[in-house]
Image 1 (cartoon, rainbow, N blue to C red):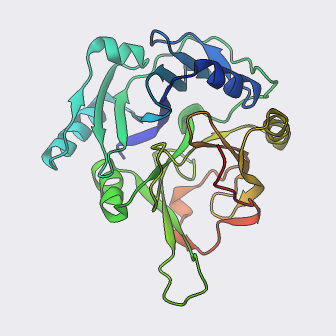
Image 2 (cartoon, rainbow, N blue to C red; image 1 turned 90 degrees about the vertical axis):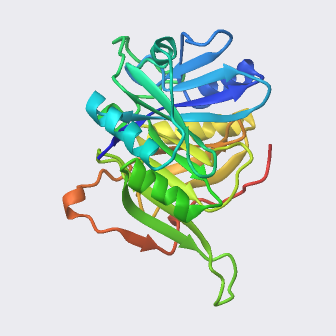
Length: 298
């Protein structure tokens, strides 16, 4: 499998102060030195950063960093993309170092979502100390968490991530939007990397102006999640989904709107799957309980 995990997410912002307040005050992340002048970075484990905010003229998603386990796999993945006609730009050594990687390349999926492929981890071994008392985040070889990309070209996007990048199907959720029998519904496809996390990438069949539907962070305990939920409410942040447990990955979580316009799913108890005993499925509901959705708001 080409992709080992989701390594990091990069977003753009006009307001680093708003992101600092949100990331430390609500999510409980640890601010870290930014490799980008004028930017701001946050860590959730022993990596130098997992979330990087670069200064820019807009608010929104920039790129997701997907880790290749070895240099050989990285090189083979770039060759496969180019053979398929995908434009790939290899970053300079300085850019790769700024991302805390050994080598870095960029490409876009069929909807224009930017993916940064890399190999080689930098670690500074400094302890993670949560700004809000989070016990710890579930990362390690499972990576940062997961991202959900918007797509209006579901079949083509699935081919890009599954065939060209080597992610594997986990399952899909198809939700009916009306009681009409011929309603095709809305589909989200979930793909896993080479680790036990239920999915590292998902593809949601609708557009999203911010460029990303959501980023998931997995905390260690339900108390971590509940306290973060309380902090979000006290801060007056927009709650895109109340507390609930998803059906497919079993995550207990809530969704809160970030300053970048995309949501953060903050959860715990995600299913770590034994892939040798798993059969891809289709779920007809998104949650077992909870998760009352409210996509409006700032």
